[in-house]
Image (cartoon, rainbow, N blue to C red):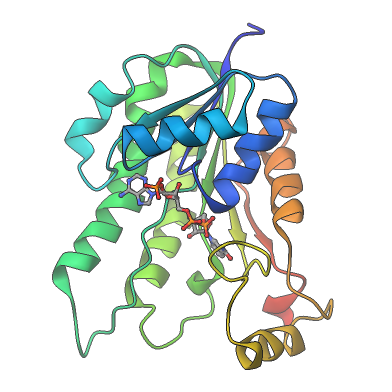
Length: 233
Ligand SMILES: NC(=O)c1ccc[n+]([C@@H]2O[C@H](COP(=O)([O-])OP(=O)(O)OC[C@H]3O[C@@H](n4cnc5c(N)ncnc54)[C@H](OP(=O)(O)O)[C@@H]3O)[C@@H](O)[C@H]2O)c1
């Protein structure tokens, strides 16, 4: 069982990559995935250790089964991929909405479906959502909707996949993540002012929370906000 892998879908960048790096540094067999094979393999080489890279497009769910054929037994499955979509109802971009909804709801589910025979009873799944779920903003219609979907997905997966554990992590804006580290200073300050801890959460804190959700055998069906108290403000 020691060779069971940690698979991070969307592990080539950002938060997923940080989680992958943590487990690679622990000497685990890690698989990172992104949209293309060459980029994922290059990322795996940078992460080091026994890390492998695989490429597939979550918005093309029919391609996922074949892409994951080389993956063996999995202990931890992390679903972190995202294509951001600024999309309002007034100026609705159907193609962009369909990509994101397919990627996060159908694509994530198809990864789980594909790997299910390779997930033992004590395996754990972690799905990334986000707090646009609770705090919409103009243009967040699809993001807010799919992150709400993640909340419900966790609950049905806990029942369907039992006794395997399934949890979700919903970060607020992660200040040092590649997506946000160069945000305009006025936006940064506005977010800090609304965060009771007086600062934005960090990638290290997201990795720590990911480990808790994956490794604590008593935690199941949780949708955990990691937000410095932002939802209280
Ligand atoms: N960063 C934050 O502050 C924040 C806040 C709230 C929630 N979140 C959530 O946390 C998760 C990670 O966010 P992040 O900011 O770390 O993301 P990121 O840096 O933008 O990385 C996105 C990852 O998803 C992969 N990906 C994108 N489109 C894909 C597709 N169609 N098929 C397969 N893989 C695809 C990318 O791979 P390639 O680029 O190599 O193709 C990359 O590995 C997301 O679910 C996001 O909603 C993040």
